Length: 186
Image (cartoon, helix red, strand yellow):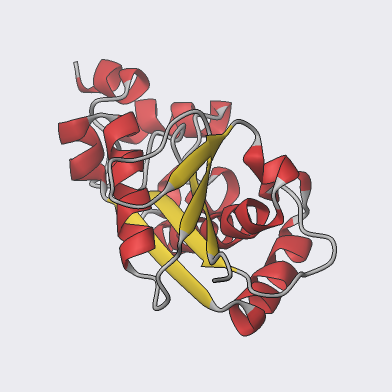
């Protein structure tokens, strides 16, 4: 029986705002040029996102919302997003390769690979899909909350974002358990 390998990666652990998003991808065929999403331009990520979604056997997206991040903590919320991404796959994997040093609690045979998004194409694919999805989401949030500049920094704690946070206070998508946001609330 042939191994059906899913790659799983998550994005958005560090930002002060927005969900944490995970993607699970089963490629089935190889796609030339895949690498860690952080090493690709936005245009290249968009290109590969389309390519992956067209050619992959299955793609699943999972997310954990701001309230879940604040309730659970960012690590547990990331694990939850990964579980949801795998649950969204239309094909059941026989092995899951997870970027990082730990796997979520699940019944699947899986292996955590530190910097797996650099060494495993299937994890690179997941990192690209998750990043494109979350970046689009943060650009959409920019429409609702233009004063924070989410379309530029995607919720990360840039000087511009910290300044807007001090000036306007947090909005509904800010992670109140994160120190810079908590500090403004006090």
